[in-house]
Image (cartoon, rainbow, N blue to C red; front, side, top):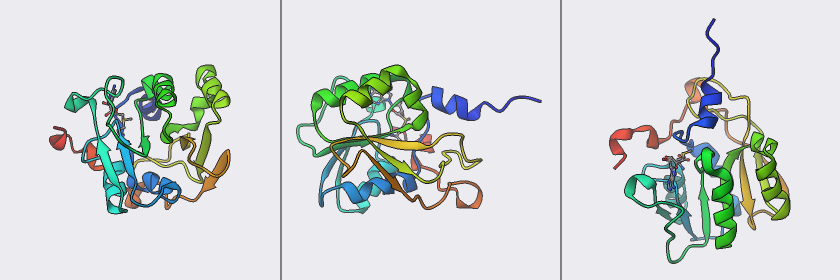
Length: 185
Ligand SMILES: C[S@@+](CC[C@H](N)C(=O)[O-])C[C@H]1O[C@@H](n2cnc3c(N)ncnc32)[C@H](O)[C@@H]1O
């Protein structure tokens, strides 16, 4: 029987898109009417949609629009929040720490298995926002890992546990609108 590697692939590839229910868990930790830079997102991103629907301003930038996170940053923003490309997670964290603004990056908890990221977390007081369920990105099955927000200067404690609405599988599946690649550009 063919081994199902879909969730291994999901961790390796950079093109997977976050469902709204995972974005919602960061909302309680934002100041009212904030300006949030979403640097790996288009207007179709659920980060952008959820933040705008909750009274915040979302500044979305994406490599597809010629705006490379490593070369560009907006003039003014209060937070940087997104799900970054897994393949450059350490470089993303290092650049964000250099910028110095509060941030929340969604990564899988298994990232802590990597010595490099573990050191970044330990040396910089990175905080973890941990959902109670392993949320699916494709609606098919609950993955073998938890998606966690790795936060900087955002949470009241080093680790905060939160309840997420459901696992995003089967009839509960709420796909990100970013999967609609017709709306990519
Ligand atoms: C894991 S996906 C998440 C997308 C979106 N943030 C979400 O959560 O639905 C990461 C995205 O970052 C984009 N990306 C990769 N490198 C980038 C860069 N240097 N600057 C901006 N975007 C980049 C990828 O093309 C991909 O669409």
